Image (cartoon, rainbow, N blue to C red; front, side, top):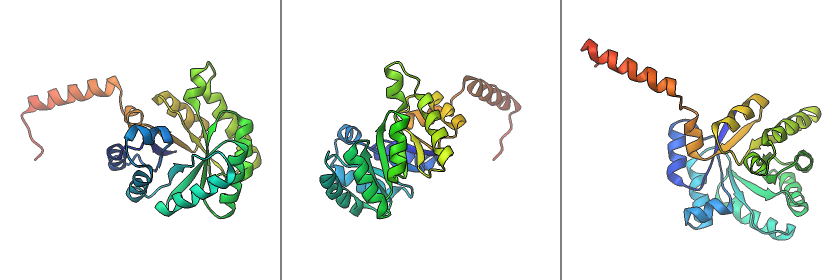
Amino acid sequence: MKFFVDTAEIADIAEMADLGLCDGVTTNPSLIHKSGRDFLEVIAEIAGMVEGPVSAEVVAEDHAAQMREADKLLTLGDNIAIKCPLTLDGLKTTKALAGNGVAVNVTLCFSANQALLAAKAGAAFISPFVGRHDDIGYDGMNLINDIRIIYDNYGFETEILVASVRHPIHILESAKIAADIVTAPAKVLKALASHPLTDKGLAAFTADWAKTGQSIV
């Protein structure tokens, strides 16, 4: 499974890269707003930091304007993936870009039917939002399972990029379903390493080692 960092914060990306936990980066207008930085500037900086894909989202709603925005975003780095909304215009843009060899991340997916359309349009990635599904009383992981079954049935190459990840259980369940990628904030990715028994065991080892009076170096 690949880990993407869902952020526009440069420090978080650098930290995750040092840990080997940054196979790519996803951004969205809300994350850019939270960063307080210029959109084009921060995307270009992120693209220069990582080797994997960096998702940059078009904000126009109609196809023609989305294409113009995509053309601009693609100048920011060789690893830019254009993020398009799962609308009819977004699917039209996805088909056009994919036909030109551009990686497209289709976002705001909330149904397996939508995921099927994105794959048909040639999306490189589909981003189903599991946390937002949970928020309204649905099990977001059922959506991931449905998409996995459909994509495997027909051999679609679109990668399932699990988004709106809120906690480590989302990542665990995604891995069990064989989702290709999860994108999550740095704090959620770091939480994967946490376990009280690890902390307890390390404390015991440290105490016993101190009692030996020895030093490795």
